[in-house]
Image 1 (spheres, rainbow, N blue to C red):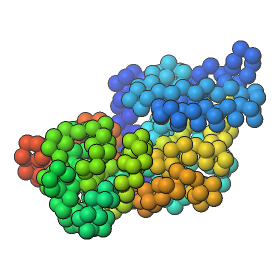
Image 2 (image 1 turned 90 degrees about the vertical axis):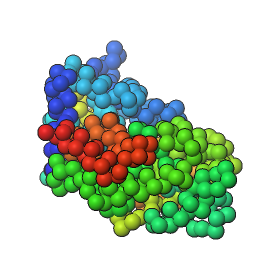
Image 3 (image 1 turned 45 degrees about the horizontal axis):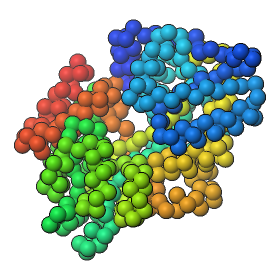
Image 4 (image 1 turned 120 degrees about the horizontal axis):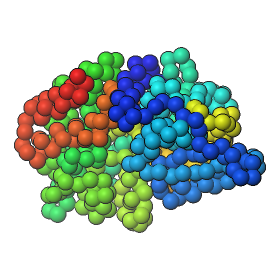
Length: 437
């Protein structure tokens, strides 16, 4: 990632590590089994059963091809894995490798606890192997000097979900601009149906929806070239907060308090016209049945002069200190073998969007039943990703702000408490600045 990004992200994690009494080195986990085989430990925060199964299947295939190696998969939920990493580093028992996010990987790299993965990048075809849609994530994954300590595995983004029958009944096309978004929300609000879901809870779902509108207006919450400069109370961000809040009049009563489970459930009722949310919602719609899933279409988040949306990602990194770094890198490269990588992606292609260009373009991927059925969603994600961004980066306090749901707090103040958008944004921006001092 760019030098300024990795520096600022790492700073806050360094403070956390000091507060926890953690060190920055490790001596590796147990490296051999009782029968003398090499043992690698691989941590995974994805808890979906089908996703865990495909990880296990790829690991089993690797062990068949490398009978001297056993790979131990340890699944730890996202809510717990950061603390587990810190404890493992402190005790000298970090895993050989882990799935995480590019932000965590960059922070660990700055602390000097990661193995360089340039050899893995070379093995999969170099930087050219990554798809154009992954360009932002690729830039965040390598240093200014061209070294790779974090590798993108999958990515996704927030999009605009819309109810096709409701929009058609209103005589409208999927909105591309803020004006069209507001007009559609208004037109679809009547009787017992509502035009758009606008959460105002102090939650991740509000963070991600509002942040996507900030980006689509050409704003951000910090200056990426000077990350200690908070911009949440500047014109573009305040405009987005004001617009987001104005749409709440077209949201169902009580929906302001929704978090992810309630929001996803509400979308399956057939009474909601639109929702600004992640591609991962497709699985909830599929679970509700094909008659529900078929009602929805997707487009990139409507623009008001800017471009972008919240970006999610899975990335991999390898910790220093293990006794078998070469085997660890060989194992990680196995995931990027096109056959294995396709199998990983196709378990959940609306959430696991491929970063490898060869797989994006492959006949196996393009003709897959799930991919064909989700073509519109996948195109919306692919269009969104080059301009998508991760909340608050490269400021080192981004994780803290996200954990506190600070920009969502501003939406709560405006929508639920009637505060002026500029006043609410200024209050939250000052809280952000206070964390920097």
